[in-house]
Image 1 (cartoon, rainbow, N blue to C red):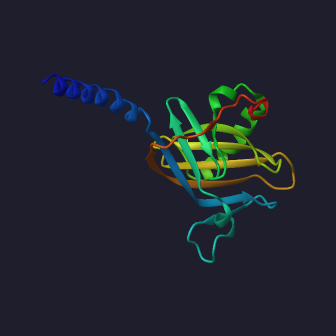
Image 2: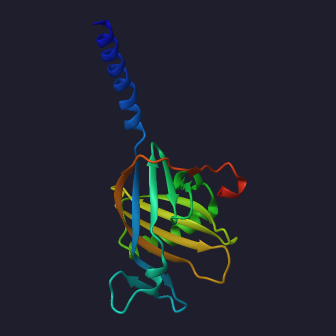
Length: 189
């Protein structure tokens, strides 16, 4: 009789210990696919592509699907499947910078162009494996279903460009690797 009692207690305690571990292991990831892309032209107008327009959308076809991971108060961003998740810096943390304030004033008109409102804004210093650097301004609407991303290259070879992505939530239990900004190269200022 004792054997059955100990077996029951052991299984019961294992269930109580393992069940919460599984519940906390889930992360909510938003997979975001581009639907609008564009850039300002020299004449002051914008070149804009919309998904499924005729003829095809060469700019949109080259933009990879991104992912956003939200953990507590932190937001992480993965620009393509080959990168790791990297932390985004909320606008509030860099709002004191005169350069950021000036850029915000200019880029807020782009939000109006994209009809993008009721969002949270983040900044991200993007560095590619080839050494290309850019500052990304990523806005996420409050329901986490859309993102607006404006990329400002660190050189004059390419103009700034933007795109809007539609996002869908998915829950994953797999281990997610994240790059924290310990490295001074990852910091905005």
